[in-house]
Image 1 (cartoon, helix red, strand yellow):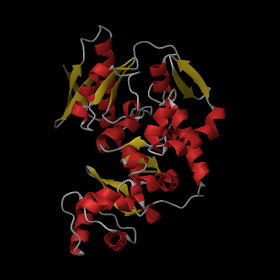
Image 2: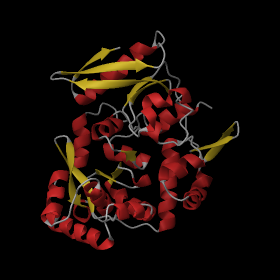
Image 3: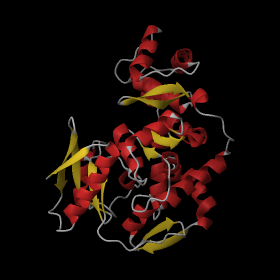
Image 4: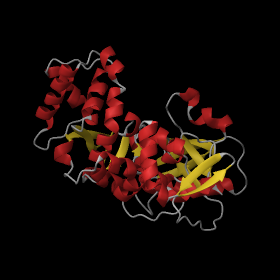
Length: 355
């Protein structure tokens, strides 16, 4: 079983079969989104001939948005999924943040005041950037010093009050979730568990149950319950002592060398607890130095992470500096150049490839 090739296929990287940003995001369940330019490219590279304005439009029209569901980490999710995902994931994320709230002197009464400030600031369809949200809090006598401001925004988002909505230059603005996203039919907790498990394994398989538990951020008991509900729709294959689960309808076309210029934080890397199938552990520190939580953009060839790349945006072009772990083979560099050119087309800019 070629696990890497199957993951590229199921994640829509090697064989794009969906048509819109919202379809991609819904298929994957959620896409890690700390780096806004990076996650836009994560969406774009999974679509045929997409350009950045296509993804911006999906944000601006309210089809996709950013909030903090899985593991309490910033993700892009489909608008129709945001409420049931937050309902499922927020309780554990909120309970796990009690010590942090205590350290920041954010008790329930203070956070309730913050929520009221946000309602007054945003109601009526208004949208504000982070600085404006902080200014509203400060005007109400609420300090945003240190990490207080960020945690207040995070807490309000986990309660389903606000979300990151339309784009504005290099950032997104906050909106009231109830005004920005139309109501949809609710899911029971059991339905939500099963749905999240299905989204995960149908988009990221072959994957392990441990991978899903880690990615979801749910308790092992709840994640297993969701998995058990959808297990009958999956097939499994054991490699060594590891059991991998996937949908039964994967068919791989025969292909020549395929290269991809993945951004940092892409789900191909971040969607699994165990990344050793696609990344030699000896190079793990090169894509996330010192485990600092900042993931570099990666050179992926035939499913394997073979190096990193870094972009420098200039006036009329983007320079890409490649840093392969080892010297690339004869056919690999031209293949990556083609992948970099595709990124240039997405950005509507010329690419200058450097090594």
